Length: 296
Image (cartoon, rainbow, N blue to C red):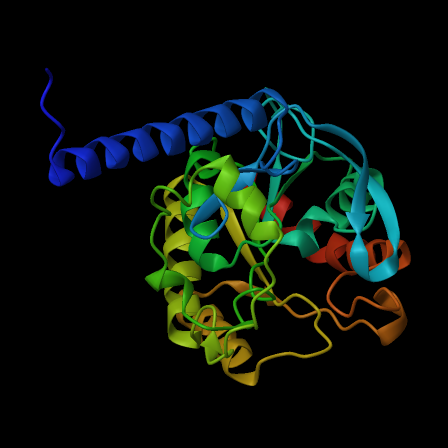
């Protein structure tokens, strides 16, 4: 006659069984979400809390512009830019920045880099990545500066001044299980109280250091650098002062275009509407054309 299992043995077997069931559920759910392409961003590739880029070869017809209760199309190149392939020859302008360069809320042809390209007759590559501050932009710029664009426009700042619970420089890559689709899907169902917004995403001194690093790398690649103090309805005087000081220190042209309130969306005070993008391109044409001439 078989002997009865000890309580400890029974507890161990129950624990093993529970772990097996949990693991099977997790693997099955993760596989199902992956096959169904659920739980991943339709726009972004990478870690949304650390470093991200745009997906390549996007063909999205209806990206939500939540504030305006409307949608706009987004197409990206194989390299993950909201633009065509990098030109093989001739002068090239590279515009780096966040969603204000990307053209959030407008079609690609309405965004100011494309509008500027039409005015110049020279390719203007849209290197804007929504959400990027100069912290992420510093990393993103590396590969594109290696292509030695004729002129580089550095347009970060709008996201740098945003208030956040912690600084961008203190962010760390997500670890398991935060990297799974299941976690991200469940996270969307939970709306916690927003954490206290205690500091700028990038402090003025770090903002200046990031822009300086990119400007130095661009100069080393033979590019002429322009600093763009992007129009804002809620500017940070400290960040603007840091950019002005950097302009004087490095001897770089600082462009500070002024746009009226009607250049922005009605319910989105950050992003330019189609007419605002067009107006910005008009204001940038003369200094960028001069920079191209000086660089050639």
